[in-house]
Length: 451
Image (cartoon, rainbow, N blue to C red):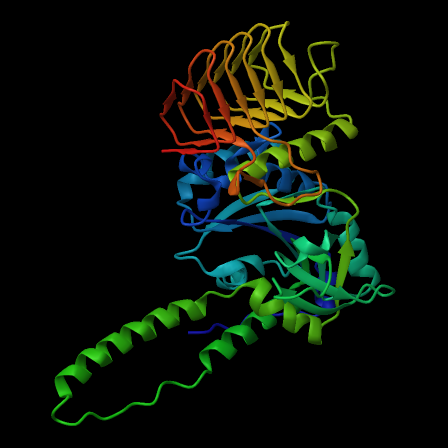
């Protein structure tokens, strides 16, 4: 049954203080498969990048917008997954009320918004920020809000420029260079239309987005039903089973009709009919899709923290710390070890004498023994890297949006990843490998997935 949504006018919204709310889309357990083996032990939004969960970086940006007081995380993980994170976040961001809203099944990036529309619209907010949790950027929400007000917009999308050969992997935006109006939007086009792409961060007028989603749902449900054929007596039995199968198909398509995605189902229509604008960021932007993409994201967030003078980062020291480096207060790093640039050391991790760590994430309770070398790698929780061992990936260009490389004609992960509780023996070399949890590596290995 479809419920009527109490939409408001801008005048009403202004009377209510022109409030803005924010939604962070966190996905669910059946997603994040590309983030394995790391997502086997922690949901991707809670994976630590630059010393904090991925979703924390979204919240930090949201907290800087004075008009936002309520944030909803929407996904289909179990409620218990975000309980501790929210408890900590409420203390860190006391001005924000943070709630997790659980979908009963995956409803798509727009379906989840619509399902919880009554909760989101409570208090009659005028605007709604929607952030995908798996993007890494500076989140220029204040600038998007200014553009929104300046243009009297109904929607603003964050965009960035990428290389032309990479653009078709993303949603592409065609815009008016002068007015910044979005003229055309295509999700992952088959041929090149623009190198301005969708960053997965949006600002909507609530009176525009929810009717747009409702129209998309109506378009799905209004499709004509299949013609019913009446069977003859001879094929009555076979037609009965065929009808059963058809009914099951109907149920399946009904479920699918509830999955509404902003990118495929909403934005293209908005470009045709709404006051839809693009804010083009000149700052960094990166998707966090695969496990390996956590390494460039870690580097970008650390560099951003360093440039903004964050007190959380370790102070540079000759032959010891090459900025930017994050070391958790409970970690132990030998003064003769050399760390950086772009290194995060997690809680209770140990880095031994003479060890070298560069462009890597070392997760909690792991140990890198003396004189070991870790480059372009992720060392999983409670893992061990032996003395004189070498664990390394391959650097990829900063402008690249992939962490795969071709070695001997085969596509392999550029970043080496050790899952939870892996052990690399003394003097063993591991190069361009993904190692699933609880494995022990006693010999040199390269360009493999170790299962």
